[in-house]
Image 1 (tube, rainbow, N blue to C red):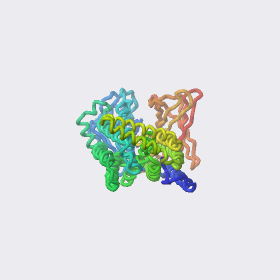
Image 2: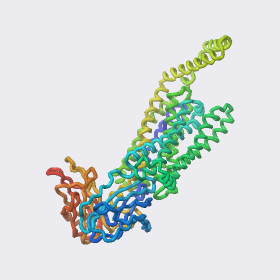
Image 3: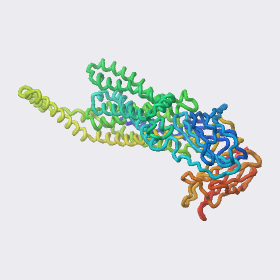
Image 4: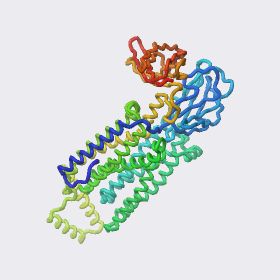
Length: 640
């Protein structure tokens, strides 16, 4: 259920108002995402440049290799390795030096003197400020390109079987959090009688178990996940100690401690609270549980906010509380939805008042999700092109679409709620039947031993429950509500999975920035080397790939141009024909043709390329992969 206000009946006036409120919330969310302006914050760090640059050919061996990143990263002693053509270490193997200046994050490693000519490989691995591992590799050549025996690992950081298990644990943790917090809130706020219902108790306890187990797995796998990728290193005490010294490790340990407090909360909720008969005492205990449970739930949500996307980038002081509110709203909505589904299918006693109370809670959750979702999207997307052209943006669009579907299904649930009555919840026996039953009980008590009396009592209870279930299942309003809530829950599961994927996906602004080879917002402006990356598809067999272009020094006058073509498998790809043209449309200059020479497999170069004046140049690239399959792609770059 979602996006509605408490309403005892199907008022013809209030229904359109509720629908209008739903529509307004959805429209504001969609347009808030689409119109997000530039200047959003990054989360995953990205390599934005290097010296020497990828594919560069330098006359003499450099004294050091430097790498620039879009934001702060964590590096270990062996995070940057430079390998000569034979695969031997060309760097001094010292700890990378922090060369960060102003807003430009840069690290460097020193090289041995007297390095011979040839192609050198730079492999790097780091941990982004949002806790996700990142890695990459590139080459540069001294004197002239050469063959190299270096075989880089095809597995990216955080991948492989360890990455799969770690990701499963992450999904399980989010699901457990939703069931634990949402289920507890549903019992306290919407249906206090649910504290004595065994299905509700099982739901919340299973949520706690799932979250606890997943947190332990993530803590143990954190070291191999960000490092070797081997399960055996999960029990390396030195590695575990190093994890505890990091922000993600501290967050996971904090979550485990808070889950201990959550276990005490569950024991009181389904023990002392469920057994209270006095209404006044129960009311006081409800207030205490709500305050204590709210503090614990907020603390658990904060363990995500303090170690992932919200903890880095701009406005972290605002982003982290907003992220906590977002997670709590998700739990209240989706966890409450799961609780309602269990109550409707597994318990005969939930009444219409509890369903309507949850409807109000869901409405408040949607309002919070709308506001916090707009802010989070503004931080992570940053542009129209990033919204539609990056994986993060596409997942975000999918998430908005799923929310729209969920709200549409919730509207049908709202209609069933308006028709819902309590006549089928606790069917009364006819007076004669009740008297007859009471008389039979008295006779049984007089003539049957206690053990037989207890057995008869259990049989009568089972019979009563069966009657209630039969009458409940025959109620068309309740059956219709169950079906619509089941549909909501199915969409909610997919929505939760997409949301979890977003937390481990490189944000759109950072991905676009890295693909364009542009520095971060705080880095120096243009006027240096130009790095472009453009995907292509000629439509034929093996016609997909990526073109990478470097223009150095990226200023007016003579420039060196390098082009690399990678196939869909990421390996160098040769093509029969490659042509480029440069056009400055604002001054009606061009197209200026460039025909590069092939240097090696998948690598072309052109020297003394003349750029007559500074401006926003369009670079057209024509790639032919067969006699008939050809495509021309273009991208703008600021030169000069």
